[in-house]
Length: 243
Image (cartoon, rainbow, N blue to C red; front, top):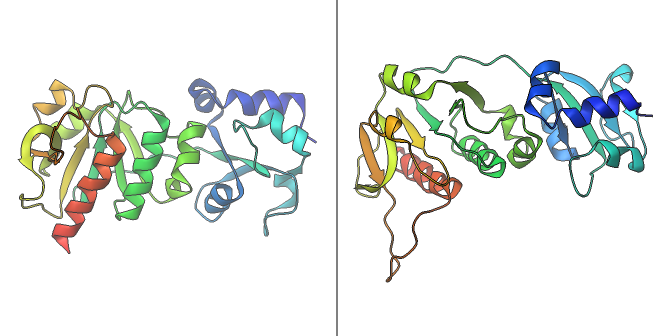
């Protein structure tokens, strides 16, 4: 059974200030929860409508009804379980390999998808500006489909980070050189910009290599690509060139 205090705590974790206060976040659904259980994330408490998972200490499990799950869930259709995990300490970002940097990404679905893309293309580190959406937002966690366990996400002063890195810095712009004809390295920082405004002028001034995904439509009236779609094309091209 889930108590009133537990309901209050869990629903509060939908807000960043309470996640920061309790140092906890929650994940829902069998697949995402199982991915987190299989990782180095520390389980705080598991609320489940049945005996779904193996090897979990009994003191960490609370069996609840579907009606109780609905009270704590952030989903329109709750899925069998909800688990609380401890927010881990951020890990340092190395000065090698490909690193993705995000400038003011605000949509949880976009961030979650970009984390999945980093996982797919073998990019272990994602650097976010401090005004990006929180990686432990429930919608972000859900959108990662477990990839959050394999990508180190760090929040920092992005201009300072980019200004100090010794790696080449790539950014996508409408007036950049076409990505299909550029020589793309195995080491570098790839900056993706805000959904509405793209890469900010402050960050643009620090980009050493401007690239573009060309439009092929006859009318060429589409203003821009969705940032997650642009990230997919960009990362695919970087990896294709390094094969």
